[in-house]
Amino acid sequence: MTKKRIKVRQKKRKANKKTLRDALSLSTTAREHGYGVFAQDVVSYGMRAFHGGEVELPKAGEFLLYLFLSTLERDAIVGDLEEQFPKVQRKFGERAARVWFYNHIWFSLWPLLSQRIVKSGLLGWVFDLLRRFVS
Amino acid sequence: MGKKKSELLSEIEELLLMAILRLGGESYGVPIHEALEHATGSFISIGAIYANLERLKDKGFVTSRTGEATQERGGRAKKYFKIEGAGVKALDEAERIRRGLRDGRKNWEPAGGIA
Image 1 (cartoon, one colour):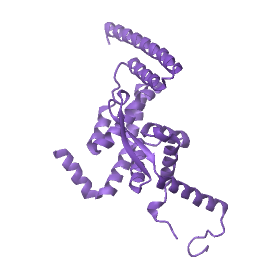
Image 2 (image 1 turned 60 degrees about the vertical axis):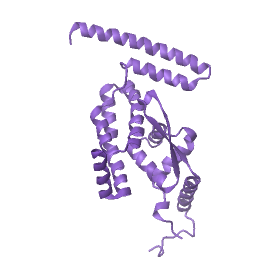
Image 3 (image 1 turned 90 degrees about the horizontal axis):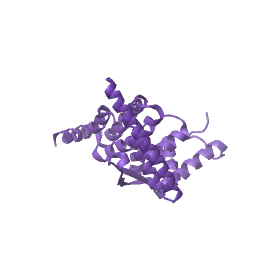
């Protein structure tokens, strides 16, 4: 990494730290005035800024869920993982958060698929899967 | 009279019902997952939670509704779960069975007697 890029990253990180500090102090004020829900949103916004903007879930893992699950199931599960991801990232770092994410994907696929197969039968499930890929 | 297998709760189903009951209106995937991991102290995948919740839904013990989409979740909607009367009844029944076994109730005996 060039010196220039390191400098830019440091500068960005410093700005993000300031955003997080501002968000935390704003959330304290919000809590004091009884706006607990708003305070939570402000903190999560600050956390996102601290980690460099939008949270990016590992794409390959997310794709596995897209491959096998229906839209409703997928939205709820991916949303839950996306909500928890920044907390893990903040506590243990980027790499650990990715391991945590893939752990969830890996151990989620079998229970979800087996439940679907039991519900609609193997043939029914394969047919449903094919229909989703074709349409 | 014996209970049908589908009416009996597995351990994770029982824990899920208790978590939903405790969380009240705020029971969607994340708090349920956190409550279960906190209570058991072990890793439970989010998929296992949803698979069991779907099973509970099929049994009529819980109902679900799609909630609001938040920025925190990348614009994806939450799925809220609510325990129904049948679910509370099933929890009570599981508790009664457990207590009966633990206390060694006299009329409890496996079919065919104890060898």
